[in-house]
Length: 245
View (tube, helix red, strand yellow):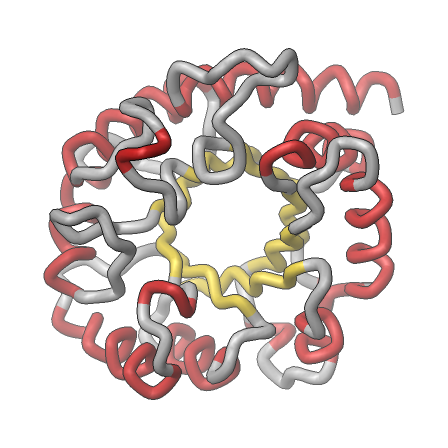
């Protein structure tokens, strides 16, 4: 699978290509799916551009994207959107009022309250992407979690942004994850590490993702014009890596 990560915590200062409104997210999602993306990860945002877990913010985003695509749509639950763990849990519980629930949501396992948050999502029928970041104790926490076998997949997030060392960091993260509770693994990098890690995912036959959340540039350093362009190039890079493995 190749997931498109539409925007992440980026804002208007990151360029006009980053979709911030529900309509812009939906248009970007549709173009990315047409380019080959099979799954969507999005950060719903307030009118002032801040990530939000509020159902009033999620509802128009999910409605707009679902009107344009038929692939699964997931959202973030990152602590930056709601720093207080108890308030974050209540926000997720309030999603029961949504007319449409996301298909999945990422839960960063190193963050406070991750277990409770994941349990609440699973209870509501929302798939959990277990976000395991390099440089954190997320892998060890996940290995000890009784929820491990119940998550949708493991999102192995390489936070090393160096093109020279990201692949090595990725391999160390995968080793720390071990069997990952038998769940599928989606491996991806960030910024300078995004393309080397995507190619590693291709060589290893793992799921991956690409999009303006993870990088604003193409492999040659040129500024990406859209999520669709990143997805199209991602498929080329992934396929080439697979063939060379």
